[in-house]
Image (cartoon, rainbow, N blue to C red; front, side, top):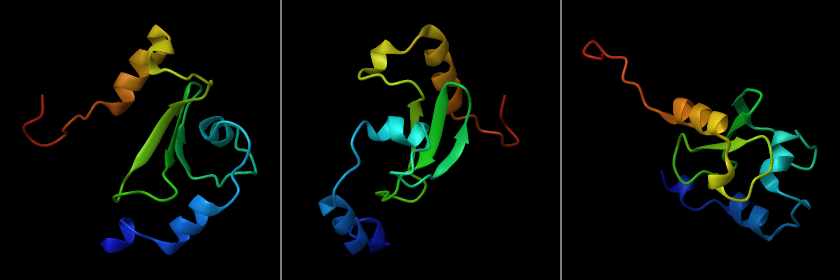
Length: 95
């Protein structure tokens, strides 16, 4: 379990030169400057695995267009983000 909290490769990554530009935009654009770890996407959002997660299953969800403040999401983007991040229990007692 400790490999999630400290990883020597993570330290090398932190000290290495970084690609120029917004990392989330580079991921969304599928730039060769970053590793593609996309697990799902649609026309407005991309979901990717964190390269060095702090815990198993850590995902990043980001709009495909560049914004610097979550309050800049359009109403449609807000609705899609809420829909994609809302947990729905699908057990025998779910509604």
